[in-house]
Image 1 (tube, each protein chain N blue to C red):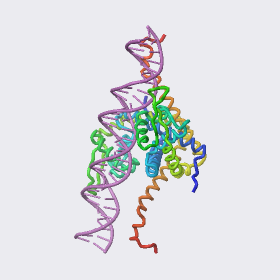
Image 2 (cartoon, rainbow over the protein chains, first blue to last red; image 1 turned 45 degrees about the horizontal axis):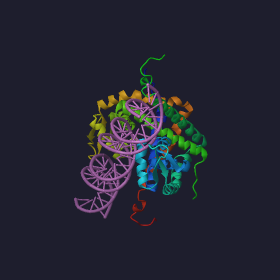
Image 3 (spheres, rainbow over the protein chains, first blue to last red; image 1 turned 60 degrees about the vertical axis):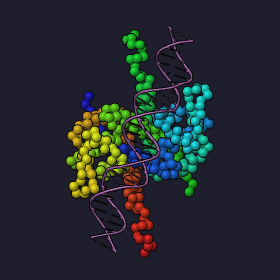
Image 4 (cartoon, helix red, strand yellow; image 1 turned 180 degrees about the vertical axis):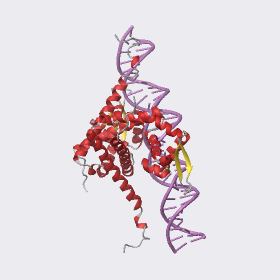
Length: 171
Length: 171
DNA sequence: CGGGCTTGGTTCAAGTTTGAAACAAACTTA
DNA sequence: TAAGTTTGTTTCAAACTTGAACCAAGCCCG
């Protein structure tokens, strides 16, 4: 099939998105690195933990909430643990499992960093958008996220499909 | 000043954006890594070069177009040069300068990768959006990018302002 | 029970990113 | 014109990311 290239409007949107999202992430990373000594992702991990019941979560769940690989999370948690912001606990019910728990210090670092972070997000994003644009932003990225999550679910479920029926034809 | 927290709508939009943009970049990186052996950023660098007059650009210009630091670009170009996709040339008019030129091989790698890349961008983003949303996407991120670029310009211009007038008071 | 597959997590090497420092050429100005 | 500053780029070490490989512990079924 011959490629359907992007229309001029799509091109413009795509370029604006690439530029804007990259500058935005940079700005947020810089602010958090300055004021809290950690990149945005690490802050988000702490934030996700802080909202979990009892402020603790299995590694896999935390990775899913944070939309990152387990491997990346392992590295991040190791760092945050060294900093004393997270504690690792074994999972009693499943001895394979490991639980990340936000420490009191982690919570207070998070609380101290939050105002500056929100201020940056406002200054760079929300204070520049109309309410309608805020709604559109949500719709657009919910759609994208939803689609990509489904796809991921489907692709891991179907993994190597020809293996799932011991090679015999459908019947 | 007491923090203006995000409204519930803003919260939802922000979370959707964080999740969606991160999954989107991952998907695009994976596709390009698979099919072209390079991450999205490197592809964009080649694309930016391909559009420049004579397919060559000063490092700093290329870094600006790509919205990345010079340091990051140096690393990327070094890699792409090893792969034979870019050639470095000295700048005749300014001996400090260095020019990145897209090689023929670089151009053809780019051309071969383009269809798959566009297909992914379509499948994950544009084929899921209404024309109105495409327009909004452009407006939102143009606004953000514009603001952050201005800010950057302003901050580098004003650098250490108390030094610019040999310390004497305004008069 | 006892293989064999799946799941939860970590480890490892290779690749990338970051920000500060280093360099060198160009510019400015006394 | 020499000293000092700015500009263009690279270098370096430390931090982070990636994906594949690995190691256990649970699960399943004959």
